[in-house]
Length: 245
Image 1: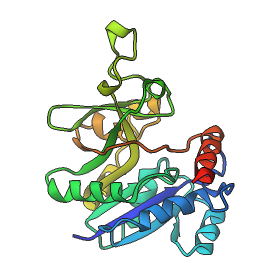
Image 2 (image 1 turned 90 degrees about the vertical axis):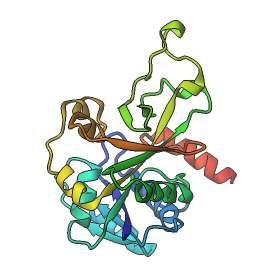
Image 3 (image 1 turned 120 degrees about the horizontal axis):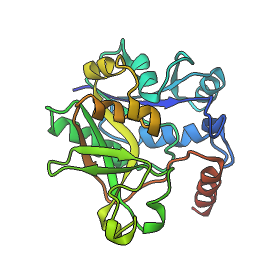
């Protein structure tokens, strides 16, 4: 089966404008993500999908394949769908453009999850939390799964709420969602045609569109989480970690 990784890179980010072109490490943020995607073994191709010409020009500067999509698209998944609609591909990996520390092997874990579970149309990955201090952070998305490893719900809030601990309980009770998805291509094109759902609009989490439409999302578990970049403060912390390495 043909597998492609597509990285949606929105130039007009609301919380951190132009974040994918932040370059305090000497490399664009989007370049870090692209390099991690290129390190995966199972995908055949890596494409960046953007809404802005500055990102297109930056991608060209470090040798990435990049396509320009409409700035009117509402989500990263919509952008990925637009980028791959005419491509001959079976499975599409949607790696968010603000995940510079994603491990290349995690992309392969997700691709294999889809190959091994052909009945599912969407897959994603999650990891245990390392400490409880991160669990209540709304910039870190939580997921809860059923006994079959399918997502019940994703939230920026603490889920599950531990009543006996007045909120956050033992760290092993929680899973953090990582910003990467896999779709069967034919389903992806149908999915992007669905209207934004109520919970998706409230939480600003596009995967809730699938949950509200009764679509099961299989969740693979990896050993540790990675830090996505939503804010300038999170980017500054990433730069510190990168420079230490």
